[in-house]
Length: 335
Image (cartoon, rainbow, N blue to C red):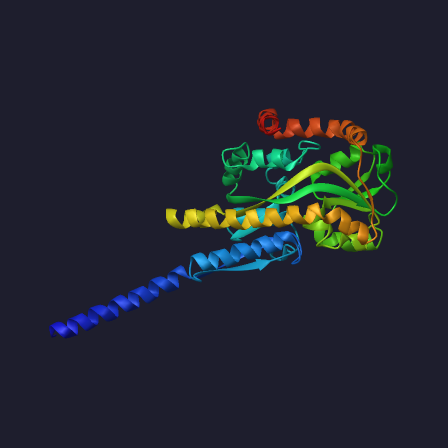
């Protein structure tokens, strides 16, 4: 074969090889999250997909599945699926992972936090939440970034909630096992229920009320259409996280791993920002929609804190006193 022929063959071989590499790099990834497609969770997931596509020139395509569709509506099963490698990404809240990792309840201990500065001090790189990243790695989940569900507020259709005694006898939908103990301490009747079932249960009067953040859930999920009373008691904070199957993550090179962490951090910063913006204007919006809103006084908040202290103590022991202390130290330094 002539020198020109060999050159053409080499070029053709290189082109075929390059095409093969491109096909190998291109992949469609799946992300599942708990809430509907109008929430800040979904918007954060969509932003993550957009950034992934931009950074990889379209080689990474993300499909987002709301309402825990890939887990049959079971929001707690999603994390287990990611841990087993049956799902690529999950966006879920800390409290929804407590059946898998009990220590995740540390974020949501009643009245652990008072403000966002304290929250951010615990989830910052190098903060006490790093211990939870390590625990989740052991369950097959690599946490890429923290986002926000927010401070959980209580709603119901029976009466205004101004004191612990007002909770007595109310049938309350809750998201996880820790909240069962909190509601029991307040004299309510808790019912753990998937979010996908909750709106129907509220409409039909199966439960009287629920508790969730304003900006991330109550407004975008239109809870105000089926609930009359809201109390902004800030009793529990709930972060979300964007996680990837560790097996999937370990299969990428260091450069791709760094890109995934960077893109996830950008998407979750956006998600956290719009969640806080929605929360800031949310009370006025909910009043306009007809909800009766009670904003507790410091004395009323102290009464709720005292009433929920037994649940705090119980779950602090389960979570681990050292982990709780590390969070409390970071919170104290942020004040």
